[in-house]
Image 1 (cartoon, rainbow, N blue to C red):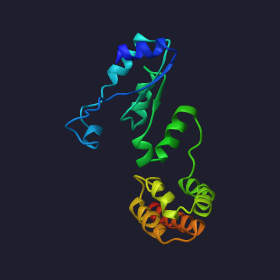
Image 2 (image 1 turned 90 degrees about the vertical axis):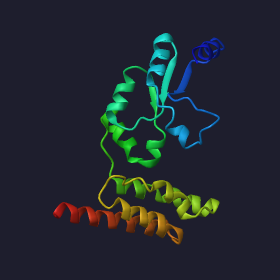
Image 3 (image 1 turned 90 degrees about the horizontal axis):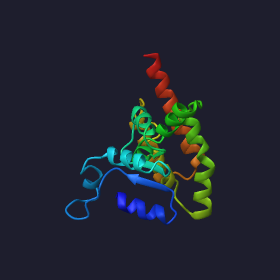
Image 4 (image 1 turned 30 degrees about the vertical axis):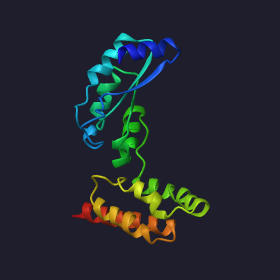
Length: 183
């Protein structure tokens, strides 16, 4: 890896995004390659130490704010992939943590998606479900998350109107949250 970085940097590349796990091309399925072999952040840290003039960005397995803080002490940046898909609100939490921004309301995020859903549906013929299925993790870890996934996932298959679907989902979640808080 270091020889590769050296050659590519000599050709003019200054930024490297390095995944902290080796992929085994034979013997493991793509799913197994996400867990085997283990992540090795030390390799990426040593690259940054060896090439301080290059921008080294760590990719792979970061999920929590402490992991993010720890990684940013030794590399120039991080990439968040799988966690952003499964728990998209984590990106808002990371932004608030790193830059002091206010945390947006999850319902407002969902409602901000309405114009995009309608554009994708009207202009490209995408079903509402084609977009909302990527929003299923927005309430990940919150009370009523399962119900939200059912609403956005199941109901979106037959939904004809994104505005109604999203607004009814947000209303149902807010109602559940208010009941949980009152209990």
